[in-house]
Image: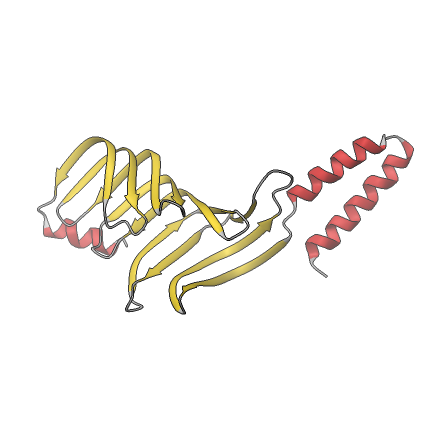
Length: 200
């Protein structure tokens, strides 16, 4: 039996026993509903998932922990990766095109699949050219195929370091625009370039 189900049964039984003495049935239902929403319906450790399109693998997601939740009335189901995630995207030749990693991830399901994903805390995106984006919060929208944030961002390329607030970019990070550029440093030191590459 799923350990979360086992814990849920014990907890709900205890609530019902207490309720028979003191609590109104409406209060029990409220507590029960809140408890149901707090526990994942499915949970996995060291998860690896492949995403394919037309029989071609497009991405691989790995996460130490993955929890799936039922969103409740009027809310979307969602999948949470509280210990972080790494997503590697592949091109047509099945070679790595870019990657995204973060200390926390959450994806929202519209019933047909994930339509929105958020990455939080120490978010890094590295594209095929080696350009690296760093921020604390990044959102991907499936409908527009864009990634965006309204928080501080830093982009490091082989030629310059750019930082500012807010960003809109293609989902593969091939094209990007910082909304409010606050500084640019031209990089000419080869040693700095090599150090930047090793941090990927």
